[in-house]
Length: 241
Ligand SMILES: C[S@@+](CC[C@H](N)C(=O)[O-])C[C@H]1O[C@@H](n2cnc3c(N)ncnc32)[C@H](O)[C@@H]1O
Image (cartoon, rainbow, N blue to C red):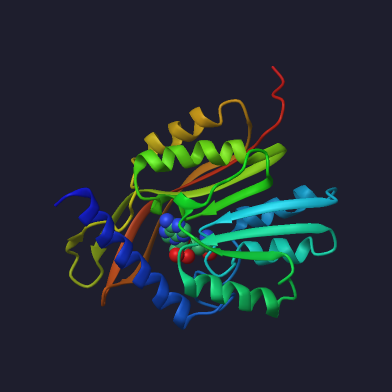
């Protein structure tokens, strides 16, 4: 089986799984992973309190779990939140949610693969990618995109990355081992050292690994996922020796 077969298969299954979730569940539904913004994103919100203008990019934004609350907080300043996702249904629901929360002026939904979304130099104060970069089509594009993200952050800006690593999937009913449906599935330590290298001249605001397990729908079965979630938040700022 060559890489492109693998990629097509994973993309298809990943797409179906998200379409199923976004069709059945709504933003901030109880008992859903969409029930609230992730803690790390909530912690970032006050850090831009002094800003008169704020530009945010949310890569693999889904239906706006982490970006709607930022838009709500900063709706009284000049704020733009560019939200990129390859799924039409994600952006459609994102736009509905933006309207429902009165921030449609701020949220800019873009249907595009992350790989194809060009990040201009020094253009964002915050770039977030929550459980998204591991779905980039190859390890090479993943590393390239990390460098592009770095280049896209303005002085004092922040990068917030949450990335699954060392993912294992099994059939929840039978325990049979399944192919992990993640395009980039790096060993945890390799991912951590990659991030440390790329952002070595930035101030690290938060870093950590959390072992997590949960069940998700996959092509008619329930897959049990074991993953090490790597969180990495860093700021582009002068480092004092
Ligand atoms: C696990 S969800 C996370 C969504 C959102 N970041 C959140 O925390 O709620 C991953 C999202 O990334 C999107 N995605 C996956 N691969 C992508 C790619 N290559 N380019 C753009 N979006 C992608 C999926 O459609 C899905 O909405």
